[in-house]
Image 1: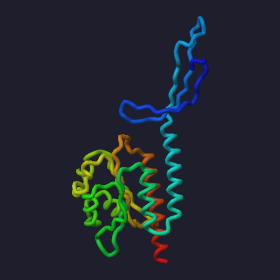
Image 2: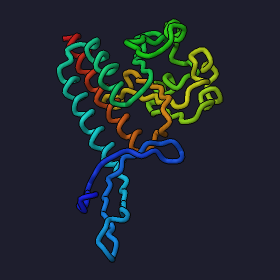
Image 3: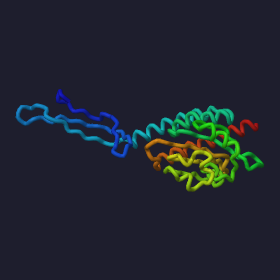
Image 4: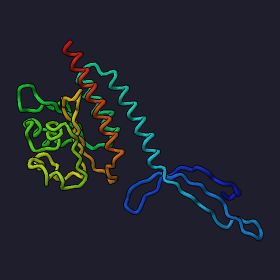
Length: 223
């Protein structure tokens, strides 16, 4: 700037008044004094490129998850990928993968990450008809989105046992293969950024990839 040069496409981060972090591309131009051509100020134009950056990041993460799932040979491998790469890709604080036990009302928790010990112990007694986002997603085959603290406690009678009454955002995603719900993926979030439509599409794509991989693993094990 002091050399009188224009700066284009300098990427940085800014924090909005509502606390959200946004990515911006800055163009900075020197402004000269009319008399002696001194640089007296700078003109700054900032473009919000948050969506573009997020799309690029989500695409890269989805590719990494897809590649890892393609190498998973059994259900344990698939769950490890879900609780590793997929969990990190969605930027969740905690996640659980569960499937219904054949000829039973119980659920089998295939894996979990980020939950307190008391919640993990409570998972052992969960049944398909329990009043929880995860079981609703499994029964209906439709995703459940809870974006505000207190929503879970209002809608689900068993929320308190699992600490859901304190959560800011919850996503419960059915794992569907050829129209059949074979399980569900639950995730919790505490970040300041809201979960918008783009986030939901991304998580549904993750759940679809995980469901396909889990079904392949089940068929492979049966063979």
